[in-house]
Image 1 (cartoon, rainbow, N blue to C red):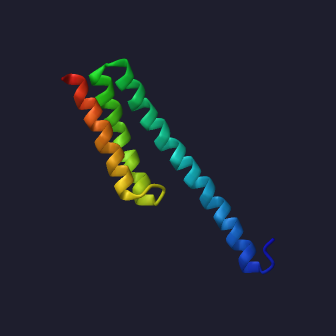
Image 2 (cartoon, rainbow, N blue to C red):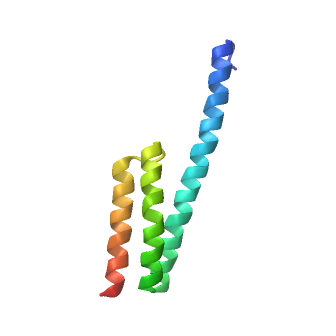
Image 3 (cartoon, helix red, strand yellow):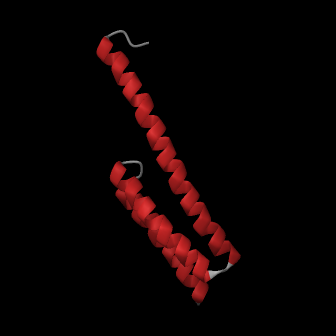
Length: 88
């Protein structure tokens, strides 16, 4: 357990930050899941719309430090590739 005042404050800050990051991560996962479901349904228009909504959310997570920038880019790239494959 934290002893000093500053250590106690630090644990409170960490708890708040963890809650925010958890919410952001969950939000990103929901957007990705919507794209995955649209791809699974085979509807390219819906999948493209879901990807368009998910992309800024992934990049925002990268900006906020929830995801690494390269991880977010990789996820967007792979989802875009799969959406594009639906039209072929």
